Image (cartoon, rainbow, N blue to C red):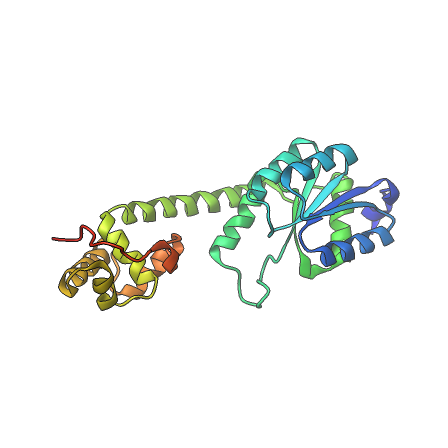
Length: 249
């Protein structure tokens, strides 16, 4: 391709970062075979990555969309702040099990775009296609257009507004109703909740009805789904009562 020929590959510096050593090593070998200068780090902390970027002065930093970094968006933004391109390796259309990616994963990728990622690359497209992306960016080609960024911005805005509205609904619950919801999400029956909380079964059922009504759902399953979406999952959130709680009505 013409855009490949216009760049001296030996002057193209790439920095790879990620947790999966085998993946990083394979990618480094592949890109090095195309005469690119490649540096890499596995399992590095955000500060270490930025220090390496500053010292090695790469043209691009390539990272995975999953891993140990607590705030990958901040890392992308910081890398772009050094004047370096940030390319995020993604499974854009499907997750490892072959299923369509979830809405939350789509939003994560949209946030990468808004953080300043120069390209999102589907790892299933192979190393040759990645090489095209690298050399295109090196030649000043824009991969993520303004239209894509506007679309990502609208997607994130709509998602955040929907999340805020859902949180407002959850905030209608009283503390005891939130406790009941967590108990249900932990897989406990009304009788088990009554036994654990030293409360009558009728009182627990009354709280459950109140939870369903306030959340605007018709079943405990739907309420649990909302609880999972908001992180209210697992028995670790609901320790056993050691004394009789203030659950009287």
